Image (tube, rainbow, N blue to C red; front, side):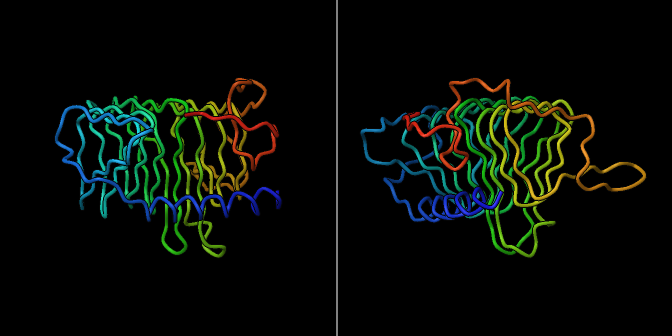
Length: 231
């Protein structure tokens, strides 16, 4: 819907710009546990490419100029992650806001708990959010970019993925998943052995009536005018 596009796009643009400009007290990321109260100053882990194995909780920004990889041993809660590419190794569990300008990959048995945000935004390059194997996501998945290259932006949920929440995709959405929630997309996509089909669904269920009434939506979806604080 036009009203949704006009409200969600500025939200995504502002979110990426604000996170990109955030600065905090730099810390070494090799520690086993980094926990920071939201009442404290922001702690920041930064580098070119980061592979993380520890526990990261609270007011922590993880920022890379290349790739951030979360090992299966890593755990996150409430953190913000910003990088061109973000990958979750098989078995990872956690929550947070994960913002990429290129790619987000969830390998098998990854579980992102509520409230989690996966978002990819760029104006020119191809972009993707994809699950590789069965994964569970509870929260929001957003994909946005330029007006003329929407076919280069793809959200792909592999067979067996369970998603609870809201999907907004200004691109191609290829789900083979159980979706409990709401989907807004430019086009659906099915890649079959014989052909590629647009605006078809295969081996997919979408049911917003089963979404928990306690699930908080972004204001842009207008499910409720009541504002509440998640964290």
